[in-house]
Length: 266
Image 1: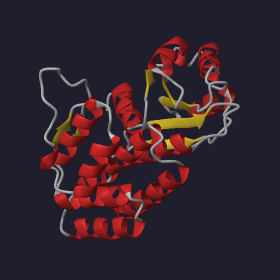
Image 2: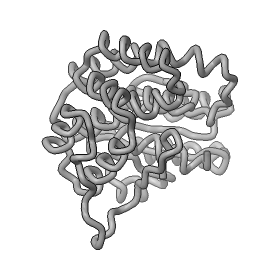
Image 3: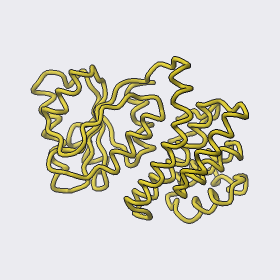
Image 4: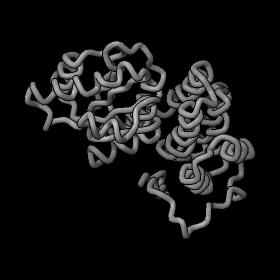
């Protein structure tokens, strides 16, 4: 489960005996409309409704502006929330990360595409520009170092970049290896940065098997037991991840963050 400023967000399956959460409790009309139109999986819809039902209306406005890719509005509202004394972590979790969670689902389900995601990422960066200095000054310790890369032969990076942005926002240090990443590059980055978690991404069915090649390379090098490996990407499934010997599978950016927390127990 995920804690957002004292709130608890369950990430497990919804019980068949429990009714879906009441979307009318969400103040922001844009957020309600986004959930009703784009969140088709009942568990995700219910989880998101319960999350936003507990978020302050001003932070809901930040999420809505981020989802719309309005970086100027996110910049203004983030500054406003902080000036009103809202905790920086609360603004980040309840405003920026919560909004980007919906963006990630929409991208995964092909409701939006790269240009829209880039606009949303720019909006999140506008908010983080206010928050990062506060977090740095507070001396909050990193949750851990994550090495991220799109596997060899694959040049797609928008999903990986979205995960990195979410991981950074959640307090992880990320080493971005970019695209077309070889097994040796993953291994070298883990050793150089003393990372304990690796994230591999693939968008093509032809490049997915390289995840297994890279994991085998970690075994051959003798450091497989020293690192957790998570995989993801549009064609990747949990069954495939298990077959490749990965430690976990994240279907979108929000799931990636939750998986990272779970694997590193932070």
